[in-house]
Image 1 (tube, rainbow, N blue to C red):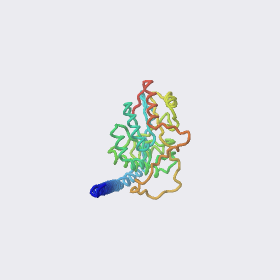
Image 2: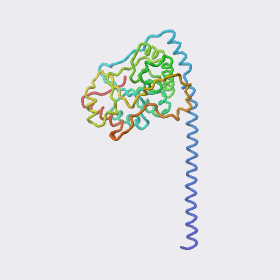
Image 3: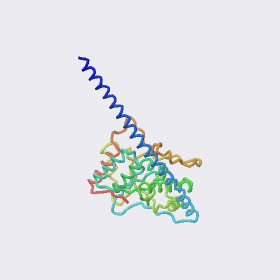
Image 4: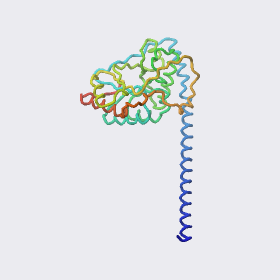
Length: 293
């Protein structure tokens, strides 16, 4: 190889390395700018998420006395499909695609904290034409055992987050493993919700390991029922003492509060969306098409 060719080759290598370095710099610069914009947007929204005025108003209504919220346990002539808890981003997007393929509408009961962490997913759910309900701030089970003030606070903050992200304030409340006592229903009404939803059947999607399992779960379902699909393990810990105020600026660093079942050696390879697909297919075979509330 001549000296001239060696020089050209060397210059080519240097030029390639320079291009790679410049590309990395530009990509990092773009990423930093995007992250700064996202963080600023979340910080701007955080003030709205506090819902201090809404909480104060709701507690005043509760103190003065209010009628309990209605309880919806059936919808004559149709099967209502409810999702308990917001799944992860990928799972939710896949479920939305399955619902679209089957031309089915559903109700997503969402935790306030998870909604704040996943604003894009909330937008996807609304644009797909599905309803969104209030699943408390943490997805707290046994919500009737919470002090009324704590419950009202969770509900109002969740209402504010969902209204801010979707421009729609939910009408319906639900919480896992919860009894709808008069005091709870009054807190629900005071927080601005019209009704609590009580499914007649709860299907744990994590127990469905095959198409046959899905068909078995779908067999007893029929028109007139409200059916909840449990997408994760509810938060069962009850607060033992009042916690300090939540720093909503740090919400973007939190992991979702719905505790998914840990994968084990016998855990199926089926995705949540595939399980939903099998259920809907089994219902379609019987001429049943789920709807929202």
